[in-house]
Image 1: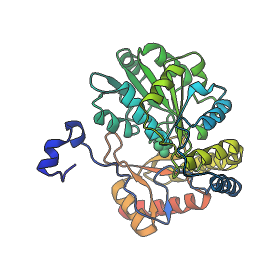
Image 2: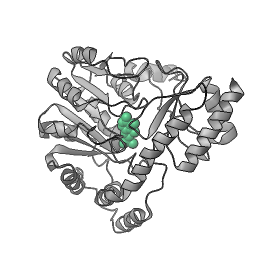
Image 3: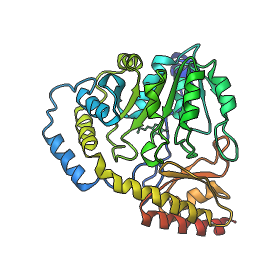
Image 4: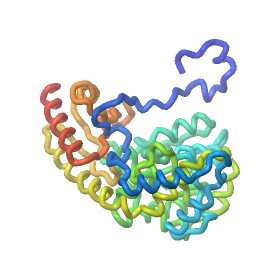
Amino acid sequence: MAGLSKRVRSLVRDDVASLSPYDPNFTPCRINLSANENTYDMPAKVRAAINEAIAATPTNRYPDPMSNELRDQIATWHGVRRENVCVGNGGDELLFNFFLAFGGPGKRLVDCPPTFTVYDIYSRMLGTSVVRCWRDPETFELDMTALLAMARTADMVIVTSPNNPTGNVIAPDDAARLCEACPGIVMIDEAYTEFSDEGVSCEHLLATHDNLVILHTYSKAFCLAGVRVGYVLAAPDIIEVLGAVRQPYTADVFAQAAAQVVTSMRGVFRPTIDTIRSERERLAAALGAIEGVHVWPSQGNFLLVRVPHAGIVRARLRDKYSILVRDFSSAPGLEDCLRVTVGTPTENDELTDAIASLVKEVA
Ligand SMILES: *Cc1c(COP(=O)(O)O)cnc(C)c1O
């Protein structure tokens, strides 16, 4: 934080003084492909059912602090028990609580950059030391040999699968080896799992690995980014700890009601998820065909794209075409990289045409 007064600077914790507010660099635009949301609207019949459920929800009473009805639904969905599920105000809150409970001074996290920067922010906030197991600079695949070695002395390991922003996944066999090597807790952040191929999720390892935590969210595939609901699947003792450190009532009555409707109607999302998956392949091919542009394969609803002069391309996409994408060009290991969310076919066509023109323009 640059503008701290002397007074506040002298009062605030050192760990906190070095932080800056999370800034996704949002500008309102005609086409927003910057935050990996589902760019399709909530399906109309699900929205109608949510509206009805919310209309029937009293607001004068506190919510169920543990969201037990929703937990039961999630448990049935994933073939586990209520004791294996913790609901939070978005995946981000669950990540924070994970750091609060298992991180802190003297604790060591291993993560695999380039990856989701929130892990780094929470580590710093709570004084957890971070050991970085860098991905291959060309393919962004995990270095499993190095990762297993680092995991042997880690309190926490986080692997994002599909990885944001590179799209790579960890093979479940590798995740199993990681759990076996690590004396601490291994989190697989599967925020984008609904977009990946069958057999990619590590969820089934919960049955055999009691130090595994799986993170899922309603924000991406299920059109609830604005409502803030995510959940963690893990062994009952880990869930108990997460339940103990959570701030009371963060999953409000409307959020619980909306997530319950979405869970019971989750099949309705299948066609749009399938479209996004096929659009991902179509968009990757179209962008990859532009001279000078490189696209990495992805199992998420986004693509990492290397474009010459990415910073300028990103600014002109916004200013000239009103298309917003995420600029990663100043992130370590991601030189000239943009991350684009896979949108509707029309959005993807517009993005492709705009990038094709801009690449020529800035050459
Ligand atoms: C989006 C995202 C999350 C969680 O998002 P919430 O909206 O807080 O549920 C977690 N991990 C990764 C890698 C993400 O991209």
